[in-house]
Amino acid sequence: MSRKYFGTDGIRGRANGLITPELALKVGQAAGLVFQRGDHRHRVVIGKDTRLSGYMIEYAMVAGFTSVGMDVLLVGPMPTPAIAMLTKSMRADLGVMISASHNLFEDNGIKLFGPQGFKLSDDVEKQIEQLLDESLDRRLAQSASLGRARRIDGVHDRYIEFAKRTLPRDLSLDGLRVVVDCANGAAYKVVPEALWELGADVVPIGVEPDGFNINKECGSTSPEALSRKVREMRADIGIALDGDADRVILVDERGHIVDGDQLLAVIAQSWKEEGRLAKPGIVTTVMSNLGLERFLQGLGLQMVRTPVGDRYVLEQMLSGGYNLGGEPSGHIIMSDYSTTGDGFVAALQVLAVVQKLRRPVSEICRRFDPLPQILKNVRYRSGKPLDDAEVKSAITDGEKRLNGHGRLLIRPSGTEPVIRVMGEGDDRILVEEVVDNIVSALGHAAAA
Image (cartoon, rainbow, N blue to C red; front, side):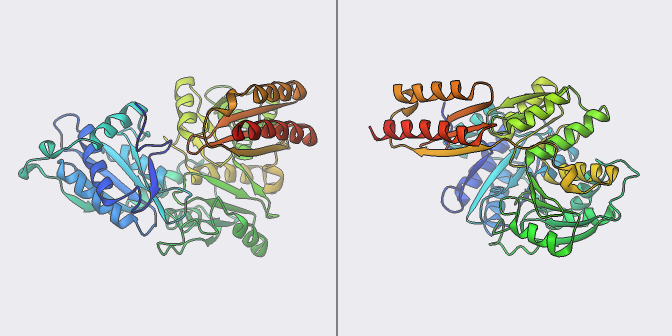
């Protein structure tokens, strides 16, 4: 069964386009029915980011959940990892995060978490999808069994204390000037407060959400404003979160960007030295730089690659027994602490290393030199260009030319008719030639 609504990270689309009140209500009903297991009073935790459409979707989902007999706890704007944590700690049957992550305000989405705080499996998502296309009138709750909804306070403090406890008890951020960009999103209250409580001199930006400015020229996908502010304030480090705070990009004291691969290198080496790695390795995706893989090999650590998407990283971590994984985009998963990516907790792990070593961030977060990486997209109208003989020949020729000094990754996009061609290696000119040859062959095949 192909998936009609769910993508790689919940349901996402244009607000009042794909994500309508009708859909949100139906998702509440369907998910509520799937997660009513046992005779206890069932409840769901709902959080959101700061998009204007969050109000519309939130109340539609409340109607859906209460109509099938589930009680609803509304917590307002909170990071995605906080909702995952609260779902488990409050013994809820289900958690909901209303967010489109790093997208601009026009989009919104619905992310669902099971009772243990993990994103739903493909099988459970399919069960919900089947119900979305059915009439549920006969499965609604009786009048006396309808759910109740209420807003709850104090959950911000719960997440702040949780995040602080991921650091050693005696560690303080005293003496560090930290610029934090909350992307005008879900973390705009909790993260600056947590950093201040830990002793940092905090300079917050992207903390004035108005419903329209989430991720707009700010946050982890647009860290230029953060770089400027770090240099202006002569700060020690900059932290850029995305709209729902499940990913992070850092900026060093010079204003240079530090991506997820470098963060993984820092944390992996630190945890290895402290004996905290569950297994001698980490999990990343096919997009992580070969430079990271070589760096880890030098430490005696394995790097296991998965398809693109943090859910695949987590699946491999759980099945393989790893406790650290992530993506170059800044989704960092530390399963000792969290069931999903947590941008703030990842940043805290790096800050702990900074305080321990007492060296500039530019030194600490440059563990390896990334290999040149070239990524190009080829759009096609129909057919299967990757099956073309000329394309296959170009790929085979490229792999021979790189000959162990680089790698090729050619994959169709999961969301649009585009083939992505990525090459990386020690010799940038050679990598560009190889990628261009494959792109040219694909262009011919697409035009045929």
